[in-house]
Image 1 (cartoon, rainbow, N blue to C red):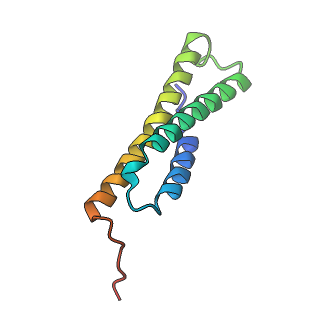
Image 2 (cartoon, rainbow, N blue to C red):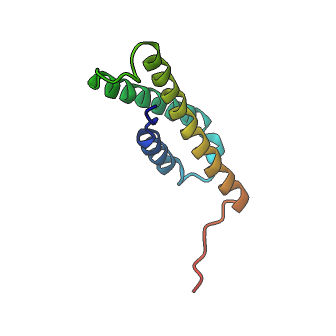
Length: 104
């Protein structure tokens, strides 16, 4: 069974966190988080479909198995971005929004 690609959701999650990290309260960015997660899911599904389309002779991605694999990669892309966002929001909330101090 082929592996689900994770590079696109991680790039989208990094770009998304980079845009909201400078805000004081990332908890207000839920709409943007769901938009970025949806975008990552769609891009990951499209990437998986394109790879399967280019490898037509692959027996693992033939028929309905290819559709299930594409849908699974789309859902995984969605969840990766949401998990990264929730973990970053949790770290910010745990630290109380304080910036890291140097240990000099």
